[in-house]
Amino acid sequence: MNSISRRSVLLAGLGAAGAGALAACTDSGSTPALVSPSGSVVAAAEKRRGGTGRQRTIMLTAAPARVDLGGGVKASTWAFDGRIPGKEVRLSAGDTLVAELANQLPGRTTTSIHWHGIALRNDMDGAPPATQPPVRAGSTFTYRFVADTPGTYFFHPHVGVQLDRGLYAPLIVEDPREPLAYDDEWVVVLDDWIDGVTGTPEEVFAELEQGMSGMDMGGNSGSGTQGHDMHSRGNAPSDSSPSDSVSSGAMSSSFLLMGAESDLLGGDAGDVKYPFHLVNGRVPDDPEVYTGKPGRKVRLRIINAGSDTAYRVALGGHTMTVTHSDGFPVRHQPADALLIGMGERYDVLVTLADGVFPFVALAEGKNAGGLALVRTGSGRAPTAAVRPRELDGTVMTASRLRAADDVRLGSAATDVRHRIELTGGMMHYDWAINGKPFDMADPDANAILVEEGRRVRLDFVNTTTMWHPMHLHGHTFQLGGSGPRKDTAIVLPRRKLSVFFDADNPGQWMLHCHNAYHAEAGMMTTVAYQA
Image: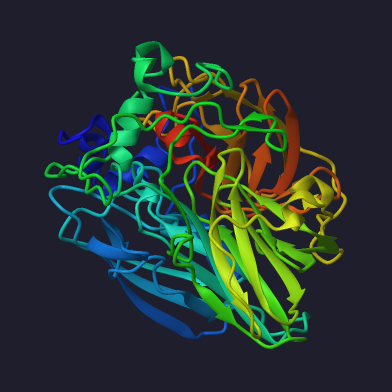
């Protein structure tokens, strides 16, 4: 799409004062006064984090890039400093990250950086318009915050559907008193890729938002509307060009994926037809190779940076021991495979065998996947079509995990309970929370109100026939009374998931589906602290 969207206009018109005013105002007396993202209580909470006093300073340039995905596949996209994933950022718990973002994206394209999973000060969360105005093209913004909780995180934009481009990178916060014993680490980033190959994310969203009722299905194969039950706010650049096609030189006529089904996900597995699934930026025909030694214990930090795909991951010939979910430790559990939704991260330990082994990220329900290799000795590399038997073994999901004793929420009475009803469907592409799509012009409309110091229960009630990975900014919640601590959790169709968190990080925080297209359509709201 070459036109400026409604969301672009709204975001471009918000100034720094405007974002703070939106968070602090009242609506004709009907909405309580809310904490400002830069207010005194936010500063006080940040001061309580303490910190080491050390700083880690980085420069991040968001700009158009021509990237090599391997196997002769090249794509035009947007990336941080010309590479995907972006360069890993690593610091120690308690260090201050100082990150200067330079926006060199085309035309009037705005952007931001959200530090996914980090409990940080509210005005550094990178979520326009709730916590900051978007960073205008040609300008810079400096993020500064203490990263006080060890774990596996990543960062990405929070404007439009930019998540489905190449603007993402791992963020690893190391524990200076690391309790795990292992010999090496391997950070693994998974992604579903379309940009610059068969289309752009903005073109994908333009098709999806028509809904099933507005589409000509004559050119689609599959099972009609089976698996689907069936507002634009995408930030398309004013001078975006037609997508490159590495195969036929022509743009795809349809991005909608029909008939993607998964029992693990309760039915419909996804909406978007991706030509590639990447592991650390490489296509399966030309995979990344991790080289190690037999008998060594390796910690894998696995990040799903995708926009519409859950992955079932397995390392052929090995059993994984799950140690962390979304940065927080869990009681160790063995698994053959692991289901990981968009925005989730899992850490696992493996003891390497002797030979060449496939690390497979099966695109759940989509009959496709990504591949990397682990080589510890001689042997022939498997082909891109390899499907190790572990994929059909014991598949670990968050519901089967338990929080480690030292991070489990203490016993406390629930002070407030909110019903978060997930609504909408493919027919009209009207995804929303509690039946109301997020309003970029009024981010506090329909906010979920909380007060600092309270124990909060969120009841996610999925009334749709599709799964949704729900992500809460600035906090971690606990699944049920003893489940894992997480910031992103899969809510299955027609199911309810109750989570608990302590309201200990004041500000205005986004709560949304981490399917980039569902969020963009409106499945997003604000968890707002009252002043």
